[in-house]
Amino acid sequence: MRKLIFIVVIVLAIVLLIGCTPGSGIQISTPVPNANEKMDVPGFKIQLNAPGINPIVNTADAHGLVGGILSGVWHGFISPGTLIFSLINPNVQMYEVHNDGSLYNFGFLLGIAIIFTLISLFFRRRRPLKL
Image (cartoon, rainbow, N blue to C red):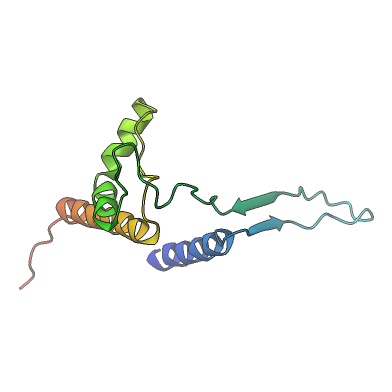
């Protein structure tokens, strides 16, 4: 079962990686059956697009601040709570748009990794030692 989950995660990661390259989109569709065949296969299409460019990268906010790597780590660390609050209050955002680009993004992902690692360690079941 773990191998199947691993394979599915790898395939999804590859599809998302291909679909999230700048300016790209992928379309997956099933073949339309030939008119002579009696089999009816419905066609479907999936389109993935990369997010747009942030036009205010490296620009200061109203307080003159630009989010750096440490802001990214902090925002990633508090992202589970921020997600819950953003569902209640639409003025709360998870991500600082006034950031310095790649370093902020790296810090954000690092903060998410840290918080979910800590959560998994906290809730992990303790197995008794076998002698």
